[in-house]
Image (cartoon, rainbow, N blue to C red; front, side):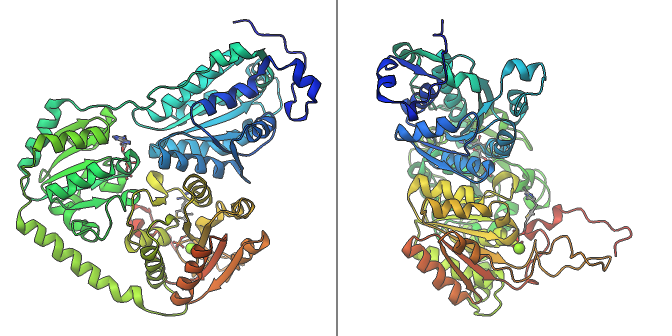
Length: 587
Ligand code: ADP
Ligand code: TPW
Ligand code: MG
């Protein structure tokens, strides 16, 4: 399609009325990108401005979109990724070329590994110069870099293709297994001017972007046949189940079948952790002793010990049924006796319909075993959660936060760290779907403030971010962003003076502190005060509970510096066994 010649860069924000009059019938790349997003119901952009996308952000704001500017692209990308998880619509991250793009790329790759739909839109430099490697401003072949790290990557060179480019990006992000998509928009594209009517015609409204994928009837029957043989069944709910928003069907399946369920971290709250069938507190027993395991939107990756080994009991002692939209996920680690490929809503509904109310009850022994193990573990933990001591340890500090969440079950909990993560996951009960957001499949540090901002912006709900002091440092500068937009986020920094513990010493006895140790007694709360938010330092669980309750009640940006005994943590939290240790010449 022919393009109108570009006379000069259009600056609509600063345009005078006459110029606007004469150019009314024209549009340009900037406008078409914005129109294409809006046409598809996308009204929020997370990003960092600069060449060549500064005007895009301005004009998006002028067009009524919410444009949230961050201090670092990785955090903007994480906000977009979690927006995708929470809404099933791709979150948009907008970055400048090369360095900004690279900063956003970690978030894009992380979104893809977690199956969150997001689109990283990045401006890029001139193709002609980049491809000849002639040293352009921020030169980089971004499309090639992005490709192996995301689900799909596209570049648009002509303004008339923007509609198709955005449509392809949306479809790729949300259909099938969701993931990250890269959309490369070279600087020249934004200034390309075309006839406004042709521009409008070129836009695409994506119809049914994530079509239902129905499971084959034979696969449903096979799954039910396997389920009927079970004496000690278990349902594992993963974050795919949370993402699918098939909450009622999943609840019906669990409750009608009477099968104990185990939620993965971000599936907590899909059914309340306090539900009588929740086996969270009997995790090792149910994994080891179950005979049929139905996975719903959960992968048998490292987080589930790959479905084999000691965690899973005797080899060959169980059969797996797996519900997933991605056929290639089947048999990824062990044999899947009944693969059920389709979207979770359709698969679970098909199972419910297929069984026609005649559920084979799990054996009474099994229910009893799970119940007893669970009650014993909960009773064992209880006194540690209630002890009021200064300094706090992880258990009593988290005990206080557990009560705050119980009283405010629609609060969104963001969580990262090592001990701070692993113990919070076990201690803080969740009550509603998609309220727990954390480090996900990679166990990545740095999602904290990006997720907190994204969650607050997308849902309007209160957010509590429970952060290890190390974890917080990866995105801590975004407290300014939280204050700037007045978001109802309360950050609690579990301040144990370091990574895992604050007590390590330099084995060489030299002046440098140990590699895992930070400045002692750092005053993290002052960081929030610096930008006009509320900062509080607390040393007891009672003080912690009160400070957080007040922050969530008021909705004011708050940072609570929770002083934790530096000796309380363990190396790598719950996953110390993955940590290789030298036995040779260790001092
Ligand atoms: P967890 O870490 O909670 O175990 P994973 O991220 O490993 O969860 O697994 C999520 C799985 O859910 C992925 O295999 C993904 O393909 C699948 N999934 C995501 N959305 C859907 C959906 N709507 N229907 C079916 N499967 C889905
Ligand atoms: C992007 C490695 C895993 S956990 C952690 C690091 C650096 C911090 C643990 O200390 P924290 O928690 O947050 O103070 P606590 O309660 O145990 O003291 N870089 C990235 N991701 C990961 N996972 C790491 C490094 C790591
Ligand atoms: Mg720490």
